[in-house]
Each structure stands twice: as C-alpha cells, then as structure tokens.
Image (cartoon, rainbow, N blue to C red; front, side):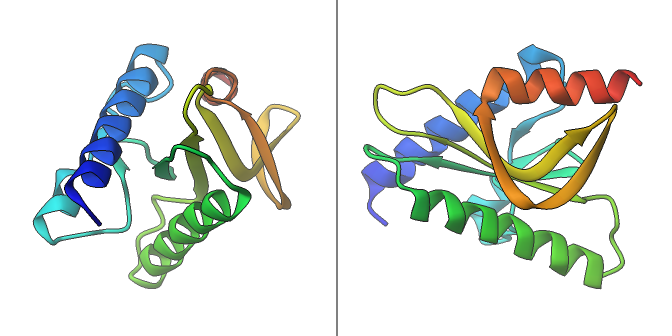
Length: 139
C-alpha cells in the first residue's frame, strides 16, 4: 500500500472517529494507532465496544470492498471470542466513496428495542447508525 493510500485511510479513520464521538453514540471512539505500529488487533477504531468497525475509503466504493471489511471485522470478533474476550459482539464496515456520504453496512438489525444479529447485511447512513446505537443504549 502506497503512502497516499495510507494517508487517505488514516484521514478517513480520524474523520469517522470524530463523527462517532460528536454523535454521542461512541464518546470514546478514536483511531487505533496500534495498527500502524505493527500490533494490529483487527480494528480500525477503538472505544467502540461492543462493536468492531472497519473503515473503508475509496475513490469508487464497491460491494466487494464492503464485504471484505465486514469479513475483517467478523474475524476479529471470532478471534476475540476464542481468546475469551466477549466484549465485542457486533461488526460494521463504515465506508465512503468520493463525493458520497459515509455509510455503514452491518449484519445487525434493530428488533424492537434491542440489537440482534442476523444473516442479512443492512446498509444505512452513518448518522442513522449513530441514532440507532444511541437509542438502543438509552433503553
């Protein structure tokens, strides 16, 4: 990966972390700097428990990129669970192409007032995702 791609990815992660903090859904969200120091724990963002989030920023976003992001997040949850860490349960890929808004694709949906995992991916705006998370935390 070239320097331009790394810089674009880092800027995207900082931007998403700021949006998550400002929304109130994840007040402790920040970029995981350990991933840049060779201690990759499979997360682009920390302070988002019980969620594992991957951030993807491309000129043209494709479904394949989103699905790979979800797969990365899911493998992190599986590895954490195998290590006895049950603090992360849900997965999300936050993604944006050029001249588009931030979107979130997740395998979690809202059923009543609780989050439940399902086999179907749902995509929504980042603002809507933050609203859903906030409303579920309030109950």
